[in-house]
Length: 189
Image (tube, rainbow, N blue to C red; front, side, top):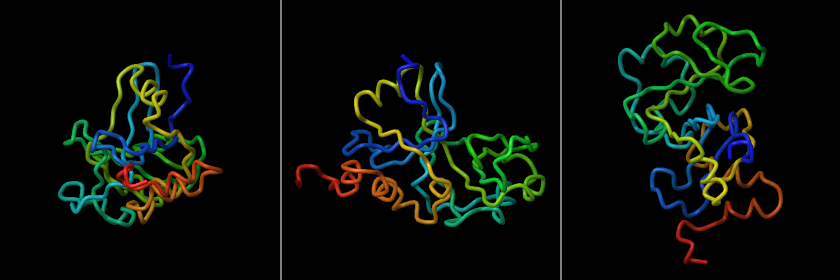
């Protein structure tokens, strides 16, 4: 079944309205990994009111605005994951950075930020992640729960994450852009 679904690593998943699970209603997920065993991604449009605390507060100077911890998803909500936008999309592997796609990389938050500071423009920290077992994401995509769309560099580090779902939809061609106008309650139509 994996071979028949669109490749999602480094792309966005946009929840279609209305997705029954409140964890994902109007969410935008950046997919970190997708293979036959499942998929992992981060909700990139849900900043929290929480700031980085010790020992992660060492990363504050590299944090992009809004400088808050983001709600990455409902799985392992104690796990902290860092994403970085790197200065160059080259294939050079920098210690403590693992390239995901283009200039987006994951960063080892247990490392000293000074070791990656020269290689990154911004860092964003997420609590928890979204995860799918083997074939689960493919099935949800086939059922129409998710739109698989190309990511732009600014999406992951948007300074207006609360508007990201609408922003990504509005830039899509044709009728797909109309979804950005869908009311929260579809019975209002």
